Figure 1 (cartoon, rainbow, N blue to C red):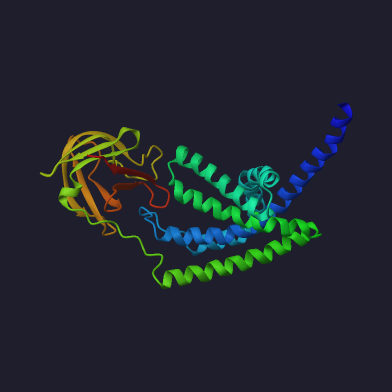
Figure 2 (tube, rainbow, N blue to C red):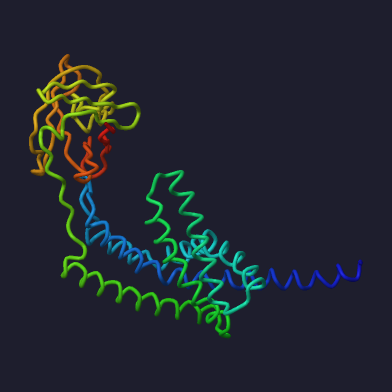
Amino acid sequence: MGWEKRRERPRDAEARRSLWRDLAAAIPVNAAQLPAAGLLWWVWATGQDQYGTGYIGALGILCLLVFAPLLLPVLGLLLSAVLTLPALLLARPLLRRFGGPEWVCRTAAAAVTAVGWAVVVAALLGRPFATTASVLTALGLLPALGLARVRARSWSVWGVWWRSALACAGLFVLAFGGALAASATGLVPQYEPPELTTAQFAGVWRGGNGAELRLTPDGRAEARRLPTEPTDQDWTAQDYEDYVVCTGSGTWDPDKDDADRPAVLLRLDGGCGLDTYWSVSGTESAPQLFVLFGDPDAGTLRTLDRAGD
């Protein structure tokens, strides 16, 4: 019995060393795909509502590219630890039990890991499950398919990383070309807020921290713990607040905000806050109202969702 245990220890030690070698190889592989993934995310984000905050401009993209050599190894390590390592631990028993090509088991393990994290993200952060699972699966595919190739080569550390840099540049160029083609063909349409009628505005809207706004078709409004524009709008003041919380009644009218998008102009009685534009966002089936309080570049975003009937 003791002899059998002594024989198992070298095998376990070798398994651990093999796992760490795989993890070390996964870091440059994950780092190589992140700029292309970030570009695709940015292109997707330009087609979503930015709530009046604007887009990441060319200067922001340039800064990301300048600091990429410092950030990519760290982000590659983080992605490898969170996504690739669990997939590696899952792929090994799958391979022992079912056999078959190693890349098939690695791909299946990466997909299962992505789905598991998508469940966590959807439960804790409320993100869409299908979208999150798809993105995480896509991020896990390249390490699953390319890890065995990288591990089999007798490359030095620098050899792995300069090849990772070449792959990174190639993937970025492909993503950039694909993004241009998608924009030119209209596959990534620009966001347009829904045009709501007076009847669609009327109803109950609820937001965070107990905020509630009740609009009636005859133009009356009832607010409870609702953020509104503060009366003192001196941003340089030391005690300046982005918004004040009001409870009371008033009136509302369909209007256009400063950006010429559909909005509700809310006027509350009693001197609590100023008239506030609640702009329209969301979709026709799931509309939303929002206000960006304070500095447009670093303000406080508050949203209201249409309550169910």
